[in-house]
Image 1: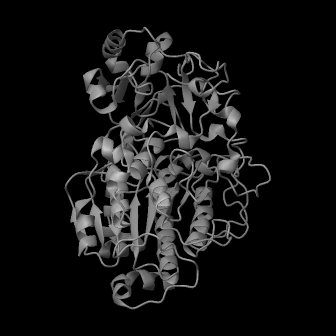
Image 2 (image 1 turned 90 degrees about the vertical axis):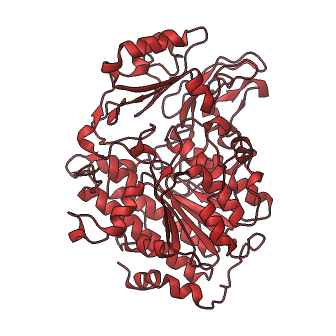
Length: 571
């Protein structure tokens, strides 16, 4: 551990009171309330509220009962810690990030899953990298409907870290890696490909801040997460997305925040051939993104070119999620040891790695002279279920989509053996073919409740209340599902033997994520009242002196700011 960093982070309160001189790099001063000129948003994907509680307080059986995330624990001394937080439902990364950056649920954003369905669109021109088949599109004709692939499959070559972007360095992935032939098409727009930033229906905090004159940047795991730029794609000055599901390569010049070099591939096992399958290699993948973020804090682009310090920026971490969910043959098993969320040895290493990275990031803010006027938000797109891994059941045979079979559109149906598959993890999101009876489908699911591990079914009014009515007629939503099935806790419709958990569902373990909002002027607070990750977006805008109602989703859904943060900023 870097001793300098620990001293700096532990001295948060002292730094807050000390005078400071801004650095010489260009600063993004167009925005800001009295206290806040910058917002740094970090998503530690998979990290539960209880993970932060355990690592900051200590838990028996780990590190002799002592805390094991000293940097985040130190940050919490001038932070508001929300412990009763709910992420998006479904708790997939796509709607999860959308909730954080738009202030909206799928009802307003239209994002249900990275792989979902839209009755108003047509298939891509060619088959995507994840298996969505190409098909026909007739300009201005009635759509056929299609599965929508906004996973890594839209990239030119998703086996490469740079996504196959023409002329790019091996590590420089981003929107240049998107292959428009692999994008679903809109017949009412002359069969134009639908880019991620136009697939989202609402604006984002990045597009609002950018429109107000602020410099913006975001770092994520797929090119498809460039939807954060908002409609039109103009909301981001700098977007970086090395592909997480690509083949592992050596990363010269990259080291983890714990001082481990990534110049050589750390894990050379067969499982380690893909970043997202290896406990060690995923740390180097995240370290690459941390290096890019540190460049941005220093007033550079993610590659090191001249730029501004962003008014709004951040990144996601994958390491904790991998530590929670992966079984790596010959190496170890992730997840938790019990229902108290005692981390496995592998998960512990991932939490410690991310905490060390957070320490480096905070130190960089201090070195840049912007720590005092930066709001740091640490949250997660989603959690992971089940925490009690003894309840985990991976059943890829008895799934709702399999049971409904021919009633499901072919691009979504398990009967399509070469397709991308149904929208099922530890949730089943179902769209039926036109003319199929929803009540009959529900009755069939109910009659087979034990086989599919049925927990709860949403359809009709219980679904429409929060998601709208699915269909193509006036007042209907072409993306809203017909049925959502949430199984009993632990059941996953994947059949995977290399996982010990998953996400996407509505369960507490899926949705109760970390939310820490920090600034050195804040008093330490713990808030037990229920909040949602949707409230992060309007709160960020208010912190930067902008109106939360500038967000489309906030106006549609009435999403409130986090009142405790607003009170601290008003002091």
